[in-house]
Length: 416
Image (cartoon, rainbow, N blue to C red; front, top):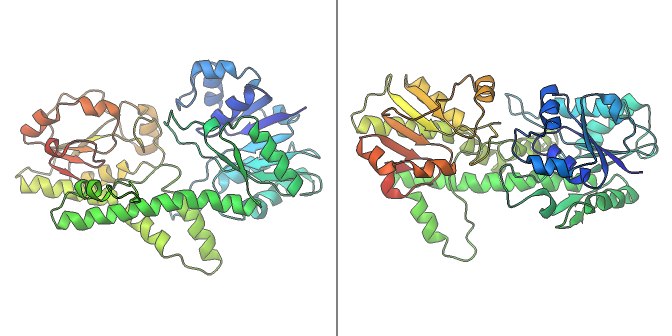
């Protein structure tokens, strides 16, 4: 009988475990004991799965005990793949997860990776770990697959079952088995890639392409600002052409777009090719937070507002709108730069968890807005922010800088 083990129950792993858990026996494994306790109590702090959905997954169980994975014959690894402080891939979570699986791996088992990696990582970095800890031989005793995740945190429209899934396997037979497994839950269908490397490459370029497109419009905003032209008006005009791509300027963070390109460039560099376009895009996007902060300071001085000890409000610390995920949020770049000028920066975010923000960034969120601020930076376009009385705030001689182009031009002092 088929039994699936999902290793890592974050934004990617939990929705996957829940969908499979409606029809197949699934063991959801995570090393975070508090996370497992919350899930057993029917609560998902990522807000990707509600209590009713968890109840529907009647064949799903949760554990922190590796021994509970012994009867599993399909292992699906969905752990994070971050970069370190030097923008190099940090494979530690992936290697540790592979060790865990290797210790319970049996003959005939299939290990499927969903984490974003560079082409070749599954077979070159993960397989040797599986072989070492299992004493089994790859493509003889056990097999591998790769099916890149396409979860979009906070998106209630594009859910796991209705997003087409790329699949692959280490042999043609295993590729078919992996494909058939995912077809059980993916309504939108699957695309079976010719090899694991092709599937890995497809995933890493999806977000790299988006990163480069955003970098292009970010660079346009830097140019048009010097020309005193509103970038959003330019994009609106250009968007009347049928094939113009509708990207907007902004801060590029999160666990995918701001990270994945570095996996591709790392691999390219190791092969003796120095990527130029991808890294140029990354440099532009990585510097946008500092640019936003400096623009706000400039607007304050132009309006005779003192900067030192000035109260500045940053709206939003999550990496995207209407989502609690604070991982790799580039709003922190704006905050740190403003603080470097001596400003007293407060952060308000109704979607973020205060304890997580304190742990990750050393910041305490304010719980209500009842002060007069010298400047307000709209860093994240949470829907709650739309109802603030922007015209009145602007009339109080408060600088309003809209990073997202979320508000009307008349409601703000300036937009990115």
